[in-house]
Length: 514
Image 1 (cartoon, one colour):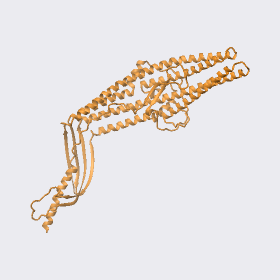
Image 2: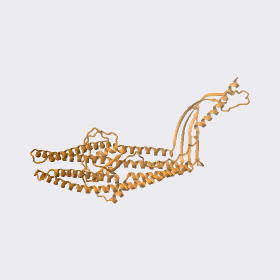
Image 3: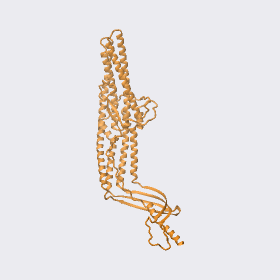
Image 4: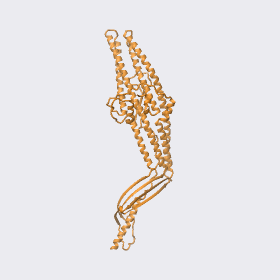
């Protein structure tokens, strides 16, 4: 009986040793090396349709039908640059500096590009993690029962004194272990990381460029409100003059000095001026809403501007110097260059898939039935991996990377052309607007003098009020032309600041804010 029990214990011990060794091999041996990192494939184009845009365009002036000005500029914002996260209420009047600062903080265009840069930073850290040591700790407690017959354990002839059972256990053991994995040499992973760094740099530069676009959008919206307010003020003055002429004609008609047609003509002119005022007041309200949306102000709050931004000469800068500064400072151009470098590193990563890679993996830990009866074990594995045939995967990755690089190089050339075009267009508009301001100032003086003379003739009964109405229209058109010319000049300076680069920091210089 004792021999049977002893034999049974021996069989259990043998089974436990076999099982423990098998499980120890499972838990303590370093895992087989994972598939080698594949080259990261960049999008074919570095441009997306979600980033939005801000451009200096041209549009008709609301309520104006006789203006001779042909520039009629407007800042056109699209996509996220038209919206914002809601900010705090405005404590008082709004200055241009404060409007731009609020835009840089709350406008969705700037916010979106900032978050895109943060995302690219996270992706770069993930790519770097492949090259750094990876350490993992594990603690496991195992309880197991074994079917020896299922494991293939057979005894053909019984051993005297031994009775080997079919089922062994349950028994238990624990394993406390730390595993280290380190990539020693992998050019694909290395170039993936370098590509991610250039992509991060490109996104940071796009975030800087977004600041310039926000400055252009918010600054342009601010100037549009100023111009709209000036048109409203001028229209109110013209309405007051038209009402006065109508009252004068009505009084003269009552005493029989003028015909009814003169009264009707004056009344039509006064009604026309009132319609124009209503249109311009509506435009002013819409421009204020547009500005509030860009900088996150509550739409129901009244908005008063603190800076009138009158006419001031443009900074003395030649076209050649402006182009030179633009090619050095424009963040979108430098971002396009970084995207080309990222595509070059991605292509190098794809080509490196054909090269061998070397990695090391090891572990150390203790294993036993309990902590007091445990013993240390370790394993170290070095793996040299060299591709032989992978079904053409490397060739496909190379082809995709080459296509992305060719597109990025084409987009870089296009960006260089756009930068030069922005500078030249802003420079031409600025010069034209400056000349139009001079002409408009002279035109206002002449039109006002002619209005005074025609009113004197009408008061003296020498002529009817046809000339007076025409002269009044000329004064109104001259004033609107002057307002539009000053607005065009300020927009031209703002557009030139954006075209050169660092527009958010250059507003004081170009607009001469006090």
